[in-house]
Image 1 (tube, rainbow, N blue to C red):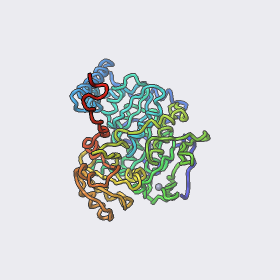
Image 2 (image 1 turned 180 degrees about the vertical axis):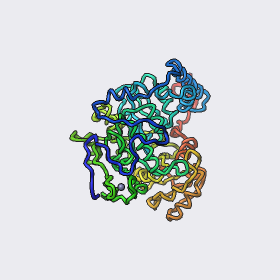
Image 3 (image 1 turned 90 degrees about the vertical axis):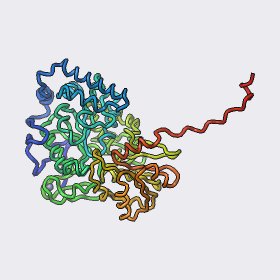
Length: 490
Ligand SMILES: [Zn+2]
C-alpha cells in the first residue's frame, strides 16, 4: 500500500474520483440528493419519508396486505410453496406502494452484496432478537416481493431485517428507507443475467447518494464496496475481509492498477496511486486470538465471537452484523452471544442423509464464494460438486474456469448436476481425479464411505436437498419379544 486514508469510526465519505455527482440519475429512478449535517437528521427523516399517494387509502393498502396474507395461506395449504413470494406479489399487484406503507414506523436493516446475504441477515436478526420480534425474509426471498411478504408476515414487529438482491436494491431502499444498509461485497456473478460488477457498484453509488439518512456498514476490504459506499454520508467501515481480488485488479474509480499488500497469504490493504482511492481504516474488525475469535471496535474491550457457523468468512459476516446492530442502539456485548444460535441457514451448513451417510451442504454460486468455501471443507473429506445452469443460476457456466480447483488435489471428488460434464472438464484440466454423474445420488455412491461435503449452486442446492433425506436414519428397532415374555403373558 502506498497511501492510506484515516477515517474516523463512523467515517467521512471516501471521495470517489470519476464517480457521478450525487443525485445523478440511475436505472432505479430519480430522487433528489440531500445535503446538510447529522444534527438535522430527525427533521430530515420526517421530511424525506416516501411521499405516499392519496390512493390507495389506508384501508386499501391494508386490504392488499390482507389479500397477500391470504394468498400465502392458500399456497401453504395447497403445498405449492411457503408463501414467502406470493404474499408480496399479490399485495404489490393490488397496491404498488405497499412496501413503503408496511415499512413505515419500523426500524430496519437491509443486507445486500453478492455473497453472504442470507447468512448475514440471519446474524443481524439474531443480534436484534433480544429487543422483540423481528420481521425477516429468513428463507432468502430477496426481491421486492420477498421484502413485502416478510413485513406482511410480522405486522407487529417494530424491527425489520431484509435481505435484498443487489439488483433489486433501488426499489426496496426507496420504499423502506432503512436505518442501516449492510454492504457485504461485490463480485462477478450470474454472468449472463447480471451486468458487469462495476456497473452494479456504480448503481449502488448513485442510489446511496439519494439516501443520506441511511448509515452504511461497508466492507473496507472490497474496493468495489468502498467505491460504491463513498456516496453515503455516514459509513461505518468494517474489516470483514475478502479473498477474491480478480474483479478489483484495476481501481473501480479510475481504472489504474490497484496496489495491494499481501498479509500472510491473504489479500491485505489496497490503494490506487492514480486517484487516491484507498482502503479506509476500519472501525470494526475481528481477530483470531488464541482464546478464540474476538470482535473489536474503537476503544471498546474485545468481545468473544463464538459462532456455530463455520469458516473465516462468517467471522466477517458476524462482525458486519454486530456493527449494523450497534448503529440502531443494540449493545454488541449483549448481542454477540446470540449469534451462536445461528447454525443452519436456509439449508446452508446443514446435513442431509443418503443411506446412512451424512452429507453437509454448502451453497456456492460464483468464484468469490468458492474461495471462501474452501476453508469450510473438512480436510481429506470427499467432496461432491453439483452445478446447474437454470435461469435462477445463470445459464453461463464459464465461471467454473475461475475456480481454484487445484486445492482439491488428493481428495475424492465427484461432479454432478445438469453441468456435471462441464465440472468434469474443469477438474480434468487441473489434473484432479474425479468421477462424473449427473444424478447426485449415484455420484455420492461412487465416493468412499464416510461423511461428504457437498458444494452446490442455487438450483443444484435445492435439488440436492429434495433428493436426499432431511432426517438421519432411524436406529434399528430391537426385535419384538417372543410371545409369553415377562410382562406380556396372562
Ligand atoms: Zn483510482
